[in-house]
Length: 196
Length: 101
Image 1: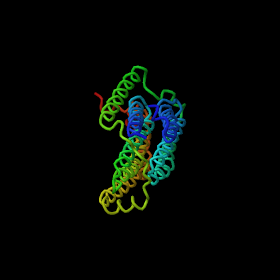
Image 2 (image 1 turned 180 degrees about the vertical axis):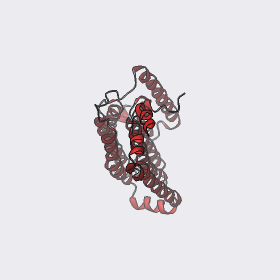
Image 3 (image 1 turned 60 degrees about the vertical axis):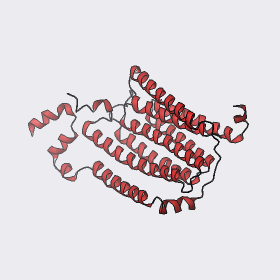
Image 4 (image 1 turned 90 degrees about the vertical axis):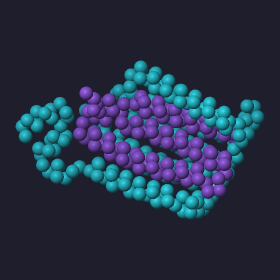
């Protein structure tokens, strides 16, 4: 352990990992939704920093662009749009009983992962190995070209699916009865259904 | 650096994500915790790829795929949450009990 602390890169690792874990913890426990998303930004930025530490530069900048750039904006957009118009939701998490159960499950999972992988790989040395983007591109378009094409189809399907799901149906929007049925809360849906 | 420190960090992050998925009530925050789990998996993939010095950089390419699929998942997931919110005026996962007797 003393030997481990003498390497400067391990200090850099600790400087990245501690804020990352704290931000992740705050992100899953914070009572404010927007704070929760902003803590996720810190955790993801720290993971990008870890990738830089390991020498995986292309992945690091992909994480910054895709996650911090696009996914976080999507999350903030989702929060803005799903916030109930009347009053903020104060109860974001479940009761203490559920929290204890969840903490037990998460702790057991962590113990399982930690013990099995440490027994398997524990003390093996890992040396930062800068990977050039051209190597990743070469490999992606030779060895992994079919998964790459499949991912592009997945993205296209997600694009079309997202538009179809989130779009307001124009026919339903024109027709006042079906719109009120769709938008009505379940409690008075039956009453309005009676009128129609 | 030893491989264990990255595995422990990834495992801790994944467990925090599981805790978030189990405790959160708001559907958007459940999706956010899933993103945390995906980030943990990415760390493991890249660490093992650098450790193995794979000539095809397979671990890094698969973490790129995870990033792409994660982005698609967030897009679709948020569209579904939006649809549920529009129909039921709530993004609370406890209130989605239509299949309960």
